[in-house]
Amino acid sequence: MNRLTGRNLTIAYGNKVIIEDLDIEIPDKKITSIIGPNGCGKSTLLKALCRLLPIKKGKIALDGTDINKSASKEIAKKIAILPQSPEVADGLTVGELVSYGRYPYQKGFGRLVPEDVEVIDWALQVTGITEFKHRIINDLSGGQKQRVWIAMALAQKTDIIFLDEPTTFLDIAHQLEILELIKELNQKQQTTIVMVLHDINQAIRFSDYMITMKDGEVITQGNIPEVLSSQLLAEVFQIDAELMQDKLTGKPMIANYQLVNRKYSKVEIK
Amino acid sequence: MELKNKIPFHFSIIFTIACIILVITFWISIVYGNADIDTSTILNAIFNYDPEDVNHNIIIDVRIPRDIGALLVGVALAVSGAGIQSVTRNSLADPSLIGLNSGAALMLALTYAVSPVITFPLLILTGFIGAMLGGTMVLMIGSSRKDGFNPVRLILAGAAVSALLSAASQAIALYFRLNQSLIFWSSGGVSGTTWQQLYTGIPVVAIIVVIFILISGQLSILNLGESIAKGLGQNVKLIRPGTMLLSMLLAGISVAIVGQIAFVGLMVPHISRFLVGTDYKKVIPLTAVLGGCLVVGADTVARLMGEAPVSAIISFIGVPYFLYLIKKGGRTI
Image 1 (spheres, rainbow over the protein chains, first blue to last red):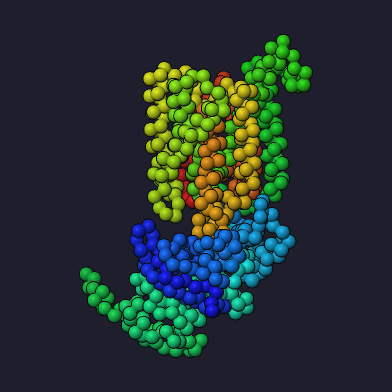
Image 2 (cartoon, each protein chain N blue to C red; image 1 turned 180 degrees about the vertical axis):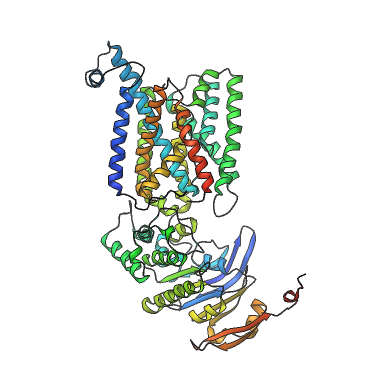
């Protein structure tokens, strides 16, 4: 049985129900990507699964206990979250931000004990930013900043990491760097990764398990070779796509895609 | 032009220098005044107080309480500003700019209208309630988005609400013929500070500032934004309103002691962050000391300029600084 599961979830913003009666299971020690069109509720689901968003009905269980009824700091020792494009105050240094990842373990005034320092140095090293420790975060490039945030999540020493569109605003090389880093974490530390991604090919290439959503419902969830099909892409994304084999990775990839309903693609521009 | 301190100096060095500057400013402030009193007389007044000596009376009953008052208000307003800036993640926030001061002044005007004789602790409480009233109105109008506060919208709401509350104070003053005491609040000055006020003011401000120092680590986490703070397991629902209430209390006390002084809570946290970075464990203590320096120093200058209102002296520096921040875009911090 997997550690993180959701049963009969209903999630709403105010009175607007986004997701209704949804069941979900996150496979341990694997990389799971949630994909779907804009507004399908994928970010909403991600936030609810890591208790950033309250749920109206149902239960999200981690190791059998309800995460919305557990002490938030205890959950923060098991799940780390990297929200979409977080902003940081001017003047904050890399070392300071990464040290905030130790917050769940601190009591009282929050002094760093030797163990904290050790973990922080490890997190900096794994993400390859040790040399930036004393630099101001806002002086770094987008890709470096994202590494800093991942280092903070690592400093939480959790078994599960959630990432909401971790590659947004990055160029293709930095996107790959970040995804490679995430993959390495999964393989070396056995970290369970759950992320929302926009790029279908990247989702296929870097994850083991895929959850596809549309209009607040999960259409499929499962290992990628079993769930991925042209029909699925047509149903979820309204695209007509060919599935080919990526020569580099041996995994499937989508190519030659166009809108199923080509009315929009043939609008004449005068 | 982007001001950026590339190498934040070591915190303990900066903090020590700030403390030395505060002591010097404080001493200068005791020495200089309308009556020419030399250093030995001042030391005598402090250590061998003679109630018959007029100069001793001036030092003990006028200058020292006035300087401690200025120190207290400087500390209170600066720390209040740092608290509000971290809660709203808004670098333009300041107790006066988000309606705390005008709210407190309104409630004090009302209180004086109802009962001219009122004890100082009750006055502080009234100021606090007023600050809550003003602050709540501004925050409700100024926060439209789920993720927080648009910096400039908050300031616009603050300006509008402050204008309304100040108009209400003036209406009350006119109706109850309170003009004399109200001018004192709206112009802001520490000249009338009494020991009676300080006996209540010192412990209350000291306790709140100590609480702020104890929760400064929490403020750093809160300043990362709601999602990250919650993700790290912070009880945002407790820390945020708690910090806001403490900030309002500090603003309320300041108004009860000196009336309205703007921009201290805006400028001082900025200067602190420029010097030591954004970690609130460093920002809060430094802000407290620098806030004291600013108001004590400004009050000395005001006195040397023939009893100009201290608030005017501070606005003279504060307004250009505020405009500079606006030009920079007042982005979230």
